[in-house]
Image 1 (cartoon, rainbow over the protein chains, first blue to last red):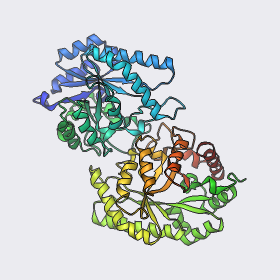
Image 2: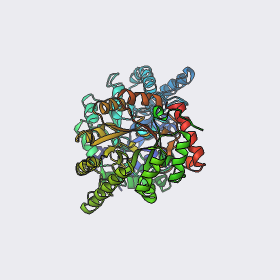
Image 3: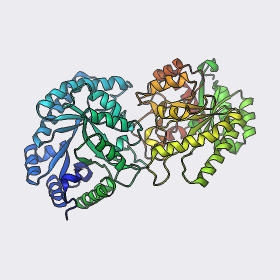
Image 4: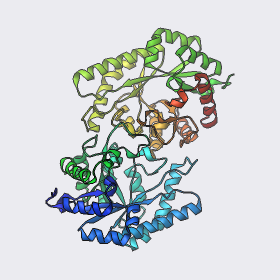
Length: 281
Length: 281
C-alpha cells in the first residue's frame, strides 16, 4: 500500500515519537512501504541504534531525516550545569550532522527550581545560542527554536510564542538559527499568523509540525497532543499560512498520545498518514 | 486574630471559590474576624443564599463585594443558545447589582463542538458584549473581560491574552467594559506588562486577581491554581505593574485547588491571607 503516490509533493514526515512503539528499522521499512518520505528522529533511539547505522538505514530506505529532536534545556543559571548543557547540545549537533539532517529542534528549557524570572531565563537561552549556533553552522546544522505552548513555560520551555522565538532567532544569521512552527503550541495565538509571515520573510521557518488540540488535557499535559482531525486545529489554514510565507519544506506530524502508542505501530502510522491526507493536504 | 490592621490599605479580597467549603455566613464571619475586607462571590452560592440576603450579610459584616463570578459563555453560534446565554448574562448583571458589586467577571466561552474558528468565536463575544454592556451600565455594573490561559482556549475561553481582551474591551466605553488581570492566566506573557500599562491608561483594569502557577498540572487542568508562593509567579512584580498603571482597587485571591478545599475553611483562609502578606504585599 502506498499512501502518497508522490511523496515529494505530499511533504509528509512522521516524527518518530508519534509511533515510538516501532523500532527504528521497522519504522524505516513501514515508511518506505507506505510511501512516507520523511522522518523526524529523536536522540535516544538514534544513540541506541547508532548514529552511523541510522544514517545507513535512512539512506537504504530512501528516507529524508527532516529533523532531530532535540537540543535545548539551556536555562540553567549554575555554571557547571550550564557547561554540561552546552556539551550535550554540541553532541546533539554532531548527531544531527551524523544522521544527515540540517535541523536540530531546540526546546529551550523551563525555570530552574525556585526561579521566577522568565525574562532572565530567556536571556540565558540567547547566551547559549550564541555559543552553539556557530558550532552547529560549521557542521551544516541549523538550530530551530521551538516555542512551546504557554502551559509549559515553567517546567519545559520559557519560549512560549512565535514572537518570542523570532526575537531570539533574529539575533543570529538566518542560516544559523530558525524557528519551529507547531500548530499544537501556536493554534490559540492570534499573533502567530503575523509571526509566520515575519518568519517567512526572514527565511526563518526551519520546520512545520502538526498535532491537534484536544481536551480534556491529561494529568501533566505532555501527552495531550491529539491525532489530526480529533480536535480544534484548522490545519489547512495553518498550512496555507506557512505556504504563503514561502515554506517549501516538510510537514512533520508529531503526536505524543498514549492511545496511539498502545496500538500496532504500522496501523497507527497508516492512520496518521490518512489523517494527514484528510485534514492537512 | 486580625491579620490586616488596616484592611483598606491591604486591599486583600478573598474569592469565595478559594475556600468554597465555607458556607456564605461562615465566610463572611471569618473575613470580619480576620480583618479581610473584601470578598469575590460566585453566582451559584449567592442564588442559593438569596441575592438580598447576601447583600444584607455583606453589609452586616462590613464587607465589600469586589466582584461577581461570572457571566460570559457567549460563543454559541446557534441563535436559541445565544439567546439563552444573553438572558443568563442579564440575570448575572441583576445579581451583581443586587449584591452591590460594580464588577461582573466575564469568561467568554470556548469553541462550540466541531468549530475551529477562534476569530469567529471572539467576534460573537464582541457582538454579545454590545448587547449586554449598556444593560449592565444602566445598573451600575461593569463587564470585566477575563483572558484565560491559552490552555483553556478551546473549551472555556477563546480570549487568551490581555491584548485580545483589550482589543474587545476598547470597542466600548471604559465605564462599561474593562478587563481582569489575573496572574495565573498571564504570568507567561512577555506582552502582558505593556498590556497592563495600556489597560491602565484607558481606565480598563476592572479587577486584579492572583494565584500561583504550579506544575505538574492535574488532569483537566482547571484545578491546578496554586497557593501564593508555591509556584513560579513573581507576585510583587505584577502588583507593581498594576500599581504603576494606576490601579487602586482590590487584589482578589482566586485559587481552585482540591488540597485547599479539603482543609478547614477558616484555616485555609488564614493561610491564604498570610501568604498574601508574605508574597504580594
